[in-house]
Length: 539
Image 1 (spheres, rainbow, N blue to C red):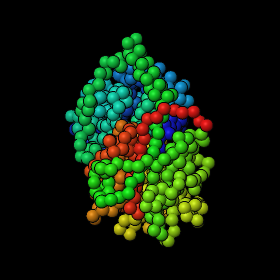
Image 2: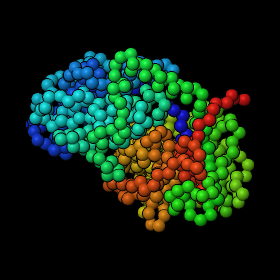
Image 3: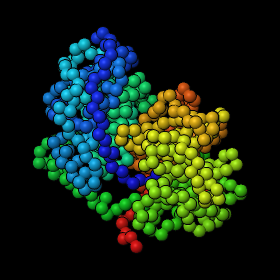
């Protein structure tokens, strides 16, 4: 899916009071795993002056379990975001038409009236400290939240300005990590949208940690940083006239970029003469040839299929004048494309990522249309045209870039899922089935991966020398910024593990700002990406 800079979803979760159920006796000196296992009564420590919509959503979610009781411990610190952050959020919401209230919107403590209030620890099994500043030490096991080593939401704001994909960490006693995740955002140019994406996935991480389903390390085995990966002057974000002026200048520069420039997506192709990109692990010496466009549209998400001795390339075609993506196709011969891509599948909703495959003697497609809330299967009746809707594979899910794999006699479906807001690119879910039509069973450990650097698919999975290589999008510097090649280490009904071995970005052989996807068939190889281009008038 090419970037369309979506805003945060407007959510209005219902309020749920504390759940009923028995309580385990208060215990001190518990390890992280023990605290998870017996945490039936949880005290959530919040700053009364820094309460936001995401806190309310979090309490609603973690309080759903009937065996869990949630209580609130209030503090009145000076943590949280700088005073001028709300001004920035209001300006962006007005300029970009983003819905509010949302996860970043300030809330009043009365919104949590259904929850019991009490001391920081007391007879609770666990204290979840979200106040952003250390409280008084208690005998109760305490988890604290930080982003890139900075406590509370200030770490998120620092990551936005520094252009980092932050690592969120829940830490227990002695700063030992309980759960970590590298978060993602669809937009790195609109702070409100990115901030709310991060907050939504923070809720996912905390809920997973309380359920015992989160990992204390990142997929590459590294630990969450105790200090920011790159220095950032938090003093420049302090309250006062100087900080307000600094934010105003940052906003002005971002608005200029949004108003006068846009990403110009393009597809590159080459005839494979020798090793392909997976074997090379670098750009080929001869570079890539651009698939031409007329300036009124872009092409992205290339998927190639070889059939009956011919190669057909499917792409997302986005017409700027219509503001919607359709699936188009063009044939290739020895000299390259035969003409220009022509639409073959169009719906009322935006379409992208046309995952095309051949099975049971026919050609099938799973296009992305996350607005529909389904993962759908189409069949070609007059290849490459004549696509008819065949089945809903998965219902009730906002999924990105669904990708199939047939492995060890079973079918696997990979997709990133956006649940409760957040990024489209950082949370990997799996399903498995005896046949590609289904029925599809969710993996019992979903989400199997939370990592904006390697969760989202970047093309079909390739078998190579007895291994499975999964192209992934590295979105740490923005959507589709770089291409990763991940080796699938484990894939079964009890677990999933992958290891990113190579990261490829734009360069001399592929000028621009992004490298997004990889596909190959019939002796041809295809990639896509974008460069910044000045807006031109439609017509």
